[in-house]
Length: 349
Image (tube, rainbow, N blue to C red; front, side):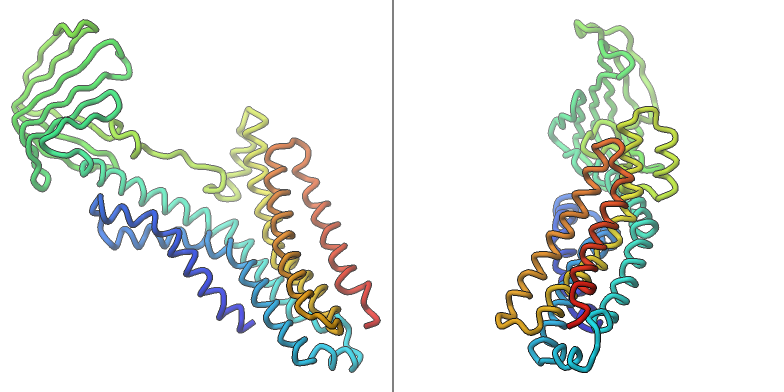
């Protein structure tokens, strides 16, 4: 449909730009490269396209068939012995193609884009971790304190680090050095210090040991909690990974989450077909009604309610055991009811 190709880029672009605003802060405050910003926002595009496409299809379908009603084209087709199904056949065919594309995106493209987003985000976290450590002030990061007298490029002057190790929480480590540098290796941030000392204090802050060094490499990635590595969520995994994780899960609740995400992708893919049935039911069979805009409003409301219904089924299946496989039966009944309303009930029109 030409209208779908015209309408969908506009709506998707608006939503995409709105969703990209949260990443602008990385350019303003953390000075990441514009190319990295573009990669981040591009990784969010497949999911946005897949989410917005059913709505775009509903709007474009309503526009086309409402115009056909206004121009009496549907009335002419029906008086020439054409059935409701034959009029809606191109719409249903396009809906089927869109459902296949959505399914492919749900199973393959979106998980890949999520993995790319996580990978880029981890690199950004490592890059900006050093940028939030301001020179000339004591930077408090959780239970750690980092002070840097001056910072130029990758060089450091007058470094002071105080932290509490996880393995020995009752002891405080203090590291000081006259100079140093930092580097990013495997998405981890390291500070290399020169000509300094390391002290270990007990819980009364009494020195237990003092070690002087000429060169000491120290990792500070974990100090910055808000840049810590994020674990993958079910929607970020591929279909194969979801079923594998479900098999390995020892807790029923976790297993249900993975299976719900996997099967939910199949269910959500039928949204364009549901929208096509609503359009057929409210805009084709209602062509002779006096108030034509009633059908338009009912069609749009029905499409929105249909999508809420489908998404609610997916969400419920992730919380209620044994409800997961009922989704397919409920969806089949729902589609049959829509088909009866759209075609069978009005086949003589």
